[in-house]
Image (cartoon, rainbow, N blue to C red):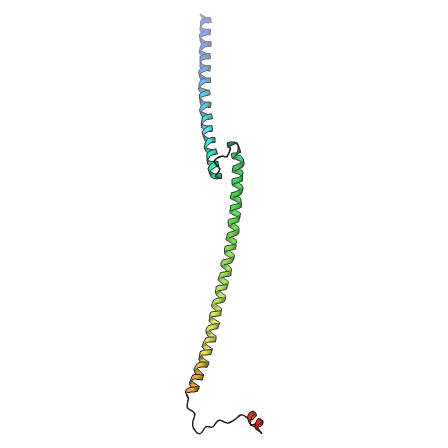
Length: 145
């Protein structure tokens, strides 16, 4: 009987090993399917990001690297553009300040011109006494002699 028990034990161990192998294979098959689905998703997403639906899945790694480079280039271009815009803003602010100063100077000159015009108007309206006769200047009198 001990031989029979040994055979039964051996058969039981063999069945357990076989069941373990089958379960292990199912697990690895499920894992492979899951990874395959992820690879398909990565490939499709990369095609969409690259706007190239004919991109070979074998080229995904290269394409991702190129997308990274273009992202870096884009960030650099944006930084450069922002610097240029900030420079223009500073120049615009300076030009506005200069324009405001010019307006103040023009206002001062205009008020001076208005004051002169008002003095001339007032002078033209004043009546000259009849006794006041215009006398020629000394230079004119000397020229006449």
